[in-house]
Length: 158
Image (cartoon, rainbow, N blue to C red; front, side, top):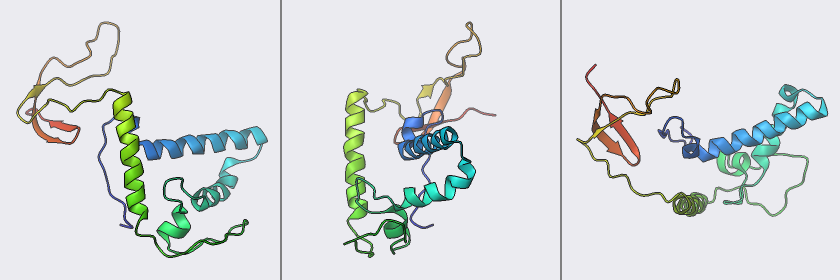
C-alpha cells in the first residue's frame, strides 16, 4: 500500500480532507496559468507534476517523490546540494506534529466542541434543500449504532 491509509470523511465537508483540497487548488491555479499563456495544460501536466513532486514540503523539508516515496533523489533541472537520499524516520513525526498544531488552531477558531451524540441516540438526517418550503432535516429519526471520532453512523430498517 506504499504507506497510504484510507480514511473516511464527512460527505460535503471539504475541510476534512485539507491536503487533497490544497492540491486541487494548486492544480486549478496551474490550469488557469496555462490557459492564460495559451498553452495546453494536458501537455504541460507531466512537467507540473515533476516540479510539484520534487519541491520540498514546508513541514518535513523533504521532497515527496524523491526522498519520501522512492528513497532516492530525482533528477531535475536545478542542482540539489547537501540532501541525503535516505529515508528520515522523523519525517512522519514532524508531519503529525504540524497537523496537530493546525487542527488545534482550526478547532479553536471554529469554536469546535466534542459531539454529545452517543450510540443509541436518535438523530435527524440533514437533507439538501430543494425549494424554499423544504425542511433542513428529514422528518423520521435515525438511531445511531456506531460513532468513530466525529463520524456518526445511523441506520433505519430498510
